[in-house]
Length: 76
Image 1 (cartoon, rainbow, N blue to C red):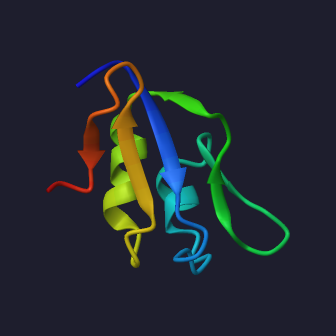
Image 2 (cartoon, rainbow, N blue to C red; image 1 turned 45 degrees about the vertical axis):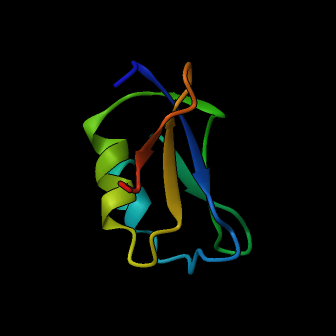
């Protein structure tokens, strides 16, 4: 896996549970509508970001290698 990730939150799926913020508070935030989004377009790879994606109850978070575009989460 690369050392930089592009993280996307599918806002049509996000239910605003806040699990991502519990796992990676420096990397995600909720907006006024309680929709999650990454704080930056490109994030450094980290266990916390992967844990946030894995813990999302509706699988709204996708992670891609920022250099290659390869999907890192969810797995195929």
